[in-house]
Image (cartoon, rainbow, N blue to C red):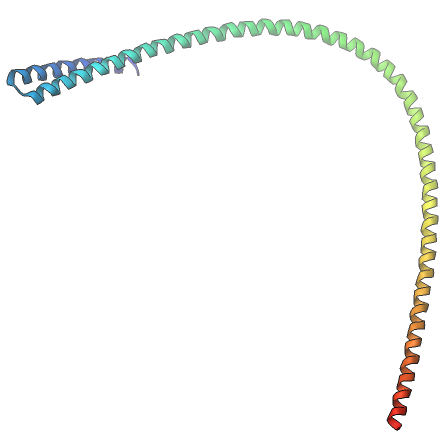
Length: 185
């Protein structure tokens, strides 16, 4: 609520309080109890609004004070961050320089190690390649044996099927012959 609105509320509260008092007095003078009660009610409501406005004004003042304290804390925090940032940057530079020196030494050592490992890796790769070729030749030989065995099994199956067909034809002819003889008799 802004200052003009607060002033308007205070004036309205004062006006309602005076108006309520006037109604109370008028009701008492005229003997009108309902007017007296209405006046007392308006005075009570005006007093309650006045108290509420006072509480709100205190709350606004406290909020403003809290905002000021928060702003001060932010400013102090910003100063501390700047100081810490400067200290951190100096420490990071020193650490970076030490790290670079260690890195150069490690790189030289690593280059020697890599050369040895590369030579060993090439020897290992050649050995694995020769082993893979030997395994491939063995697998091809096994596959060729499997093909020959499968062909033999196929020929055997074809022969068995042919023999079974011939036997079935023979039995059919024999049955036809018996049927013909039975028909003749």
